[in-house]
Amino acid sequence: MSKVIDLIVFDPAGNTTIMVLTPIPKSEYAEIAKKLLEIDFGPYCDWREVMYGEQVAYALEDFGEGEPGMNMCGLEFCGNASRSYAYYRVLFCGDGVDAGKGKKKVTVHVSGCNHPLTAIVDEKAKDSIVEMPLPIDVKMVDTAPAGIEGEYPMVVFEGISHIVIPGVEADAETFEKIKSYIYAKVDPDMDAFGVMFINEEKDLMSPVVYVRDVDTTYFEGSCASGTAAAATAKAAREADGNYKYVFRQPDGTLNAEITKQDGKITEVKLGGIIEKTDILHIEI
Image (cartoon, rainbow, N blue to C red; front, side, top):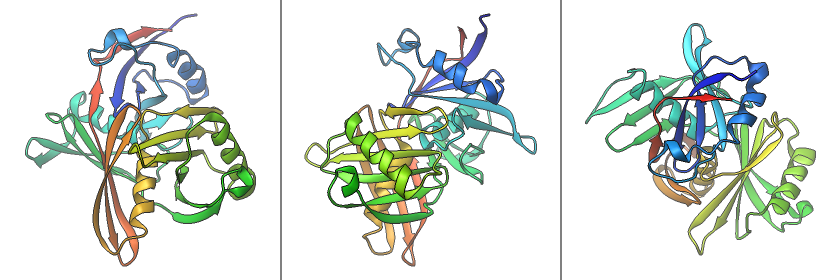
């Protein structure tokens, strides 16, 4: 039996996020997501001719204690989806408080993060800047057993970890070897795992992310948590201070701001342009 789903398609720096507004039981997340990811939403957009979703998020009326929030399909954390959700709360729900210069500040609850996050939404600039969860750890990992010589930083966040690897092309076979090794020998319990392949000559970072609960690998247009990981890896080599980084990715650019104090990362913020559709009523 078919059903009609209300949703909005967000395009946060190319990391296309389908946000489902219709209440959906968690047991149906994967099934609904599979159907939605097969749809070309290009006809509903005036900024892209073809647009398939890369991930699916579910807006919740009650995330906990009566507060609204958002779950990712695999209950992982996603920075771009969190930015999109903040955008939704301000533009569609009228939430947020005045942050000056036409901006709104809003607090959001999202899966994969054990505390609410603060976001600043600038509708005029089409930007949503979200406070990211702080890295739990940065550790060097020898990837030689996976066929990639060298030691590279693995930045661990709650819900997802990323390895930042320069000078290696992003392809499915290479990612699979790294992913299999990391899950087998380094951390078998990650909800999601990514590799940020960095081509310094082209000034391009290519994110590849695996989500365990839906057993799916995505070559993403951009990745907010991966951008935070790459920025963290850079800032880890710097003295205390504030640092701004720009990461160009296959379908968009993300801006990272890092604050480092007493040798520790104390604040990570991510921003970038977001496009969106109106609320769509899709039969699946």
